[in-house]
Amino acid sequence: MQEFLFLLVVLIGNTVESMTGFAGTLLAMPASVLLIGVDEAKTVLNVMALICCLWIALRHRKHINGKEFRKITGYMFLGMIAGVVIYDTLPSAFLLKIYAVLIIAIALKKMFVKKNVTLPGLLLIVTILGAGVIHGMFLSGGSLLVIYAVMVLRDKSEFRATLAAVWAVLDFFLFLNQARLGHVNSDTLPLILIALVPLALGIALGNRLHHKINQNHFLLVTYILLFISGVSLLVK
Image (cartoon, rainbow, N blue to C red):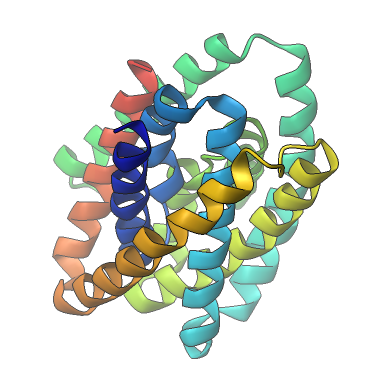
């Protein structure tokens, strides 16, 4: 039953990831930790996200904004290194609660405060670095990165493809680190192989939903996912 529930979580998470280009791992992480354990959840979900995002990036590479891809990946990679160090030195539970409250506030503002505020360039860079830090700590930097991405990637296809390319690169390096730490082993490899089935179904379903939803609905879904992500982290 636990494995079945985990596969259902993988299906839902990758449907979201394929549809929006972010938030799949963040939404799937809390339930997966409870079902299979922390290290196992991080390893399996990272591989699923890597495959999903790589598929999106390659299939829709014409929609990737090369300039923003390079900028986001560079700053996030630096932040990710810092995030790994911070996670090893500070209480993760405390950091997670702060992050959860932050993204809940952001989501509520985006949903209910219609006035657009343009952040200065330096603050946008800090936001990308912060997203990298969070991704290095919790594999869930997407919610913070959206603050920047929605300002520079206006088209939903460009938004999804560019973020998917970013995650594919970053998750590949996280996978190498997980393999180095011995987390890719006889316990996680069978789960990875079994999870390929709901992964494929999630990609197909998310791709169909992406083409059917309009721009305004897409942004609303994005902000709702931010809110859900924050709540899931807060109650974890």
